[in-house]
Image 1 (cartoon, rainbow, N blue to C red):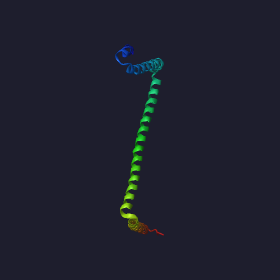
Image 2 (cartoon, helix red, strand yellow):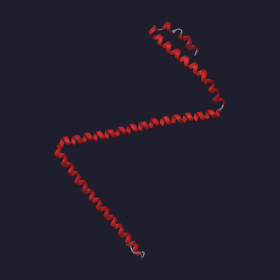
Image 3 (cartoon, rainbow, N blue to C red):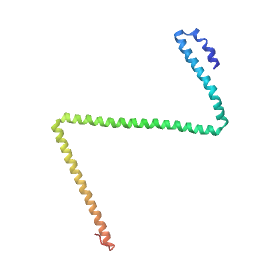
Length: 154
């Protein structure tokens, strides 16, 4: 610190006043803050070093605080990217829908939607029928097993 003060007196001679004055102000403010922190924190640090229990508790609290801050930053980053992806998907869908309506026209768009609806309703009915058949087949298997064991199935 003393060497900084020694060289600080040379600044007005070596630099123009417009550059030396802000540097000197910054330097004196920094040195004042450093001395104030040293005088107030030195007893605290001495106490921490002489009583390791308090130091270890304080270290754990600081580590916990820093880890929570890092986790908060990671959480915010993940939420940002998820939000960005959802917004891109939404606006991409809006643009795709608008392009579809623009290229096919309103009547063509309605025809396409009706055709897609009919196709997917048919697929739904087909798979519903398969599921119902599978359920009936399972019920028959259960009835046969119950009949073999001598119990009647309702």
